[in-house]
Every structure is written in C-alpha cells, then in structure tokens.
Length: 192
Image (cartoon, rainbow, N blue to C red; front, side, top):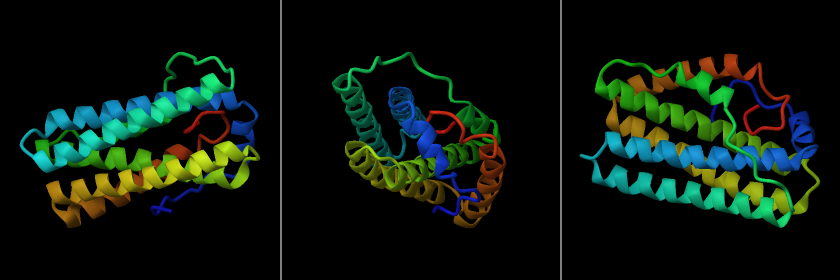
C-alpha cells in the first residue's frame, strides 16, 4: 500500500486492542495534529487559492475525525488524556529539507503524505484484525479518508514541484520511513 517498504505486523492490532482507551486518545490527538498541519500548510501557500480551499477541507475533516474519536472515548467511558508526543512523526520531520521555498513546501507535502499513508495502513490493520465491530467499521471509513488525503498531498507536491524530482524524493521518503518504522509497532499508539 502506497509503496510502503515495511508493512505493519498484524499483531500490532492486538497490542492496540489491549488498551482501546489509550489508542483512542492517541488517535484523537493525531487527528488534531493533522488538522494543525493542514492549517500550517495554508499559511505557506496563500497565492494558491485552490490548494488553500482543499487544505481547509482537509483541516475540517481532520477536526471532524478528532470529534468522532472524542465522542467514542466519551461514549465508552474512557478518560481523554493529554496530548502525546509522536516520536515517529518527530523522526519523520527531521527528513524535511530546508532548501528553497519550493523544496521546503514540496517536502512538507511529502511529509504529510507519508503520515497519511502510514496512518491509512495502520487503520487497515485495525480493520482486518480487531474484534470490536464498531471500531472495525469506524477505522475502515477513516482508512478511505486517509488514502484520499495521501493522494491529495502527493498531488500537491507534484503540482508545486517538478513531478520527476518529486517522485525521486518520494522514493527517498519511503526509504527513510522504512528505517524509522522498524523501531515501532509495539505500543498502543497509532504510529507506535
């Protein structure tokens, strides 16, 4: 999926299901951070009204996902915890180039695409491996949404940069992410 080099071990779903309250809190905060990231990209691209409009829609959708997860947490009687540090995302951020404005924007789009791709893949693993029927349906819906966001971010990168260079850079992102993800998959967090 998305040419990810290292798939998630399906046993990660068992870890996640073992502490649904924790995975849901982590997931809610991931959605909030995704909305914030989309808003941050908007501030970099005011001269592209079509992209701004699409990023606004993504930010709103991510906030809607945050709300949906928060409602599940409340409905199930879990405590909504404080925001979690996402080591996976922080490690990915180190790979963003700080070159020209164009290079930076393209890399920020690829960074967002990578997070969406891995999140989508994790939601697929949850959908296929957890016993909780309500969450299976929920994560399948979110999996589709994350796939659309991935496609949108990759498309923006190709629109804003040279498509051939973007494709080459995406391959570099895939290699980098494969090395990072080796250290994850053993915690009840979306990327952990």
